[in-house]
Image (cartoon, rainbow, N blue to C red; front, side, top):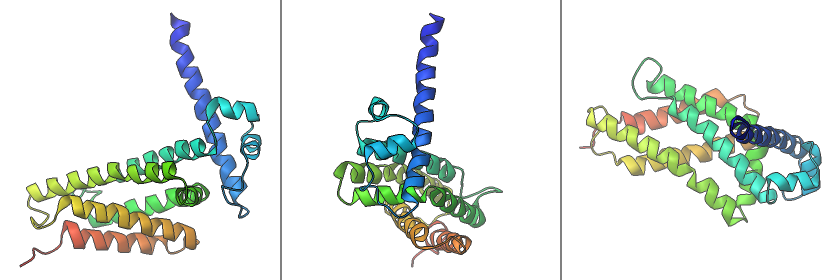
Length: 210
């Protein structure tokens, strides 16, 4: 009975190790300017330290790799977002700016993967839908925060929580993706601060409309 309970953990650990190596391998393979579409399964498998047949033990195809890794990318970024609250010693405007800085560092660390996701999402519906659907988690979280702030009287009642959350998540996501793709990161703190100012004073603490 004990050996049975150990097997899933061992398999999960092994899968996690393979996925981590594949993630690192994709970053290295794309570093020289190649696109994800140009990479072959054999190249990805070899760079990740597994055989082609071993690759298919863990993934259906290249798209499955991207779907799996994009899930990890979004899960980690959600943990960063969830750490911010509108109130409290680490919250508010300064906390929001720090949160955007952390997100920029996170996505910059995985810039090659982000570029690959955006590349393949342009022509593969499954990647596009998966990447877009994960935003719903962020939107739900932001909507909940705005409703709580409205109930406490800190956010104006005329703010539409769902609409505002969509603007924050989708708009902020586009700015971050563009910044990672086109900048070397020297101005990331400035971009993070401007995002924070825009959403803090434009949504969370904007004046009540007359």
